[in-house]
Length: 213
Ligand code: SAH
Image (tube, rainbow, N blue to C red; front, side):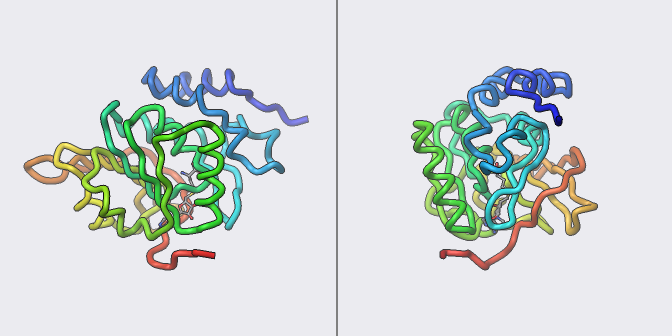
């Protein structure tokens, strides 16, 4: 029989692997991942792996969610943009750390399911949107923080434009699955500061092609 980590073991595992921000660990603890995975994978909900969700997409690996969230350095009063809502798992974690989250997804089916899951959990500071996240979400810009949870082949100019000076964006960047890296970008009054962090494998950020039905 395969062993499942369970919620408490997962948190211990994250701490062992360098997730030290207590607010992030608490947000991970508050977020029941079993509410976001497909029924077929319930027994693996607390394993530290990505899992398939509808529309050929994935719910990210908990360690990578925790790592990117820690790196983002969200503050309580922040307005945050997430590109790639997927299951809504990352959105739920961010909801515990920021004032308001806007999360944009290109598949209507995923946006609707994520919105229902977040509502059922009583999470009220997340607005989900159907659209092309490559273009960001201008109506509520500029953002204190932007997180992208699909791999961009190059830096999305619209997202940089919608980031506040003093703000930070964290995203997987790379043209192929083999070359993706998590990159952190700080927008300062002197320009952009870029730091390459860890190798990852995300589904691609697809330009244009929004699936409204
Ligand atoms: N944060 C999610 C991860 C989902 S995988 C979670 O915790 O479950 C990445 C998601 O990005 C997919 O759902 C995919 O449909 C979406 N995506 C890809 N390109 C996009 C785009 N241009 N605009 C909005 N969403 C996009």
